[in-house]
Image (tube, rainbow, N blue to C red; front, top):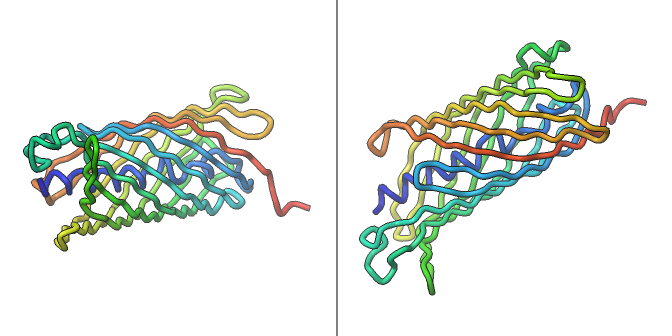
Length: 242
């Protein structure tokens, strides 16, 4: 059961730190503009299903601050859960975490690629839940550092496609309730073509995404995650302009 739990936790931390949920607002703002972004979405990775939400503020389109939440669950077999009395139990992870992104290079030509970096932290609590009861499993602390390339291609006066390519390196420590600890670091590649529609106050954006996590520990291999989010970014304009 231990390897199964760790596999789930690592996936949950990666998902909460997905840039699609934690650094979106700056990508939908005009260079030099500030704004507020909110979004929510669903993710699926193997037997894991869940949802995530985020709210954040972008200052002058250069520094983004975000706070994210995610909840994911995976059904476990009775032998993994410890007996027939908990048949149909779910492993459930609830994670919270902040993130900060710096948009290091934003050319005047929006069709050129921009460059950003993202740093995030997630605190995840995992429990085993079944009808009539629950049991804590453990807690993890995860950190991610990420590089981002993105550009905006205008389809019409008000409709854009914002394409992003992200590479992140994550570190995680998972502490079981019995005192055991498992640590791992892993890489994630994320690709997302977002459809953005501008109006008078901001931008509506729909973002499908694909992430591939590559790990050396826990038997190695890769894990694919599909995500879909819907968000809105309010454009406050140039706050410092007089």
